[in-house]
Length: 419
Image (cartoon, rainbow, N blue to C red; front, side, top):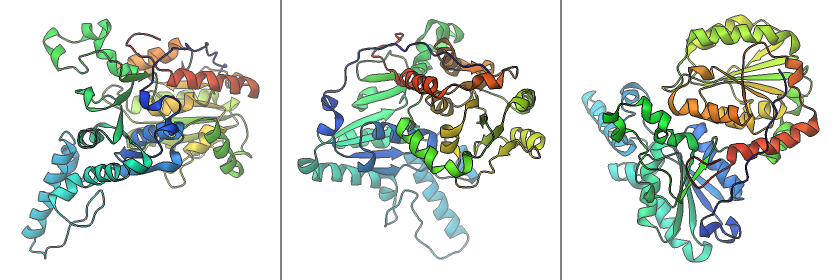
């Protein structure tokens, strides 16, 4: 593998909401994060709050969907309706089995049982807090990410618009004016490009979102927001020193995600990845492989079978502690499957070489994401023919490229189609 040359990033001039002029902390002194239980979404909100200097001043709430059984077929429902339906199903099951009634636990906490508390508890609590503490602490920053948080975040703004500033991360698909600010990757607007319009029959255009280009209260990023910065990498390196420092170098970290609707793969990609890793294994000191909790078993089995007994290769077993942060701090290079925008964004922000496995399998907006990264020199496709020894960057070069890469992934612009 050879070092990746990162071009100088553009330096767009953008406006910021008036509430953040002069520094966020001059007006905003506390934050609430609305999460959905998925690290990929929650890390984006936490990363933004951290960047604003409010990490020690935030409270995390969650909108949690019911899981298991029939619930896996109900994910298309609005989360509030899904919770209500699940509650009714549980009641029916209790009475049909002739059991004594026992209060059902709430997914999102709370004391009393009832539909109102299941659906509305967090909204009411946050709105009340924002109103009661406004005079003393100023406006409350509310940061939400993910589809399931949209209704909660928008309700908070509707009920307490004078007391909160609401930021929605990831495109809410419609009615962007429900939020004070929307932060979303540029590729979410791929459906508006001429290339995308040609791929969709004319009669379907009205059903494809988004339908309007971003306005002034939409901020576009190249990748996903996250928590990775220089300070985080330094502290993480110290925390994981005893485990990673003795490992033979260079250290290659392989992150394997899961197939999505925009990036489909299966056993064929696992076999291809295995062959590529075997090609470069002799030039690696250590290889550490991590699977997502949603990686298909047919993918993980192939890779585990090939490398389980190889002394150079460590495969994380999914047990805590999760070494992901240690990998980001100590790796010399990364191989990441093409499906995960979050994993790729985090790896790129370390400033180290990042090789993507399977980008040719991606389509629609995810294909546009990979094209944007390649054009900026941030990633390269993993081919198995790389000279691994050439991928190790001198420390001074690595530090310079880390700054450039972070600017690339978090560079924003105020209008669609600009760098």
